[in-house]
Amino acid sequence: MRRALVAVAAYAVTACARQAEPARPVADQFIEVDYPPPPAEVEERDERLAGRPECVWMDGHWAWVGRRWRWTSGEWVVPPPGCLRAPPTLSWSRDTPARLYYTPPRWYRPSAEDPARAEPCAAPIPCLQRARPQ
Image (cartoon, one colour):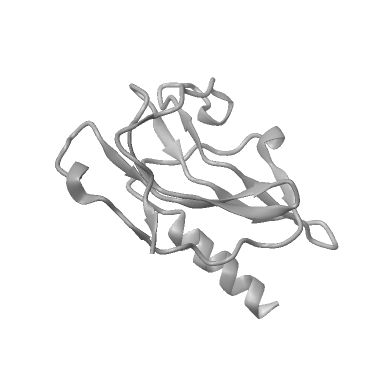
């Protein structure tokens, strides 16, 4: 149990990045998962794009694929115009026994009356290759 809590805490810390207020997830975005993801992988960023104002770093994250976690590497991207990124989230249900739910990251328009129900934005445009795992 302690190991699972440490993994969830590590994931929550790594999911934080330079982002505005994330959108609240909608019920149909919740994916029930069997177990928490491993700790985040350490990535080496290519700093050649750090000075380009149109490019922002999008942290890597664990994504639930099928019945297991798969690492999605971070990358420099040009965000969709007028959109913000909601990071991935993990949350426990209040049921007994508790169930673990994952919400994938998504881009949304902050001008929407309810960002959680806003039409998602287009995918960001990669500025360069994905990060190299260390």
